[in-house]
Length: 151
Image (cartoon, rainbow, N blue to C red; front, side, top):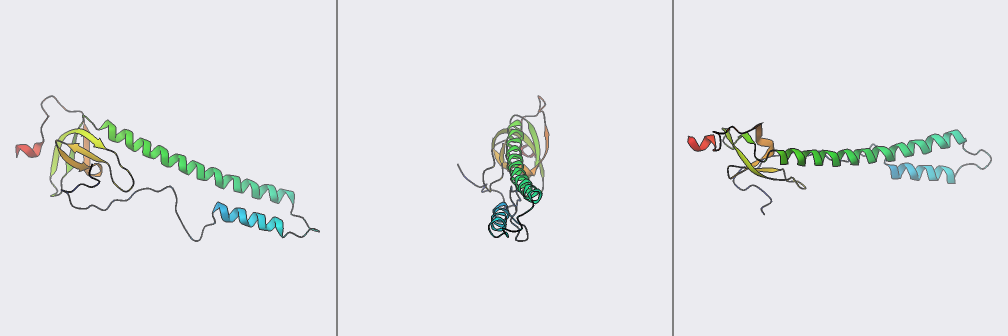
C-alpha cells in the first residue's frame, strides 16, 4: 500500500499534537524536582507550612490530570476523525482537483490517516486527500459517475 498520493502535487498539511514543547514552561518533572529539593533543603528549625505543602501537592496533581485530559482528548479526536472518514464511504462528494476544478464522485473506500499522512478517500477510482473534499451528500439514484468524466 503506498504511503503517499503520487498523482497529486504535495500539499502542506498541519496536524494537531497532544503536546507543545515550550522552553518557558515548567513540566511536571521539573515541578516534582523542585518540590523534592525544597523538602530536602528546608531549614529544620522552620519547616514548610503544611498548607503550602498541600497547595503544592494539589498543583502537581492538577498538572497530571490536565495531561491525562489532553491525552484523552487527542485520542477522542482521532476516533472522531476515523468515524467521519468511514462515514464517507458510499457518499457522493465534491472535491477540488489539482487544477482547481470541482469534481463530484462516489467514495468507494477511505484510507485512514496515520502518522504524518492525511486520510485518503478513493472517489471514482481517484485517490483524494480528505482535506480537499468540500461537499458530502447522499447519492441520488442518477448520480454514480464523476462529473469530470462527462466533460
